[in-house]
Image 1 (tube, one colour):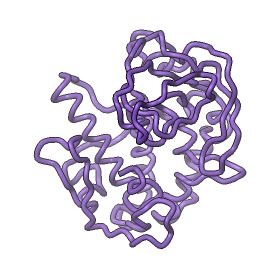
Image 2 (tube, helix red, strand yellow; image 1 turned 180 degrees about the vertical axis):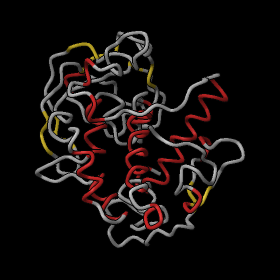
Image 3 (tube, one colour; image 1 turned 45 degrees about the horizontal axis):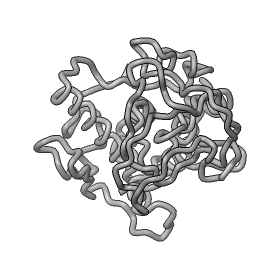
Image 4 (cartoon, one colour; image 1 turned 30 degrees about the vertical axis):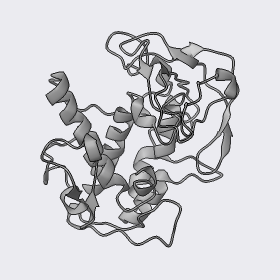
Length: 278
């Protein structure tokens, strides 16, 4: 599924559906009374001391323990990024001593951190281990600055350009989407295939959805229904996506909401949704 929901026409639509399904699960299965939060990337120059990662009782847990390690080549441009100040297991906050079970499949951390290999060759075996993070300010200081976010919104005139630049890295700059993921880094946060097992994934993609919502609302009459791009990542000649394409979440779909067409996922005030952002 991963290759069919990144760098594709349905990237934003599928992830909007996915984040909403997570919020529904929190409320229906965990008695959560609030709303799905988002991480405003540009608000905290140093995420490690932000309310998200400061490790107090109201945070999403702290950084990983400080472990000596090297950086890694990251993103579509395969750029060497220096290590953060963590790398080890999360020991503070609500997610201290959390167990991660799936993966790694496409890990992006220094081998010196000794993340246990999965017992299955496809990475889908049971592999209990700690939640590791390497929260850093490499991306927030260069690519997720307050000015970078509105600049991306105002420079993208159609959905194809908006999506491609939101996700695509170049030799000169990481994208907003990539920068958010690797500001968390670690395991599974830095693994392309199993990053949803990192709790802050959902705040990051809440912001991705908010970013799209803001872009849409600059010209809703023309932007809400826009849909363009391929259907398979890194295959420019893949069949073009259609706004009637069905999006699937498999077992993660809320009861009664399996298989929704993209046309019903374009607005936060239509289809299964009823929410706005601050």
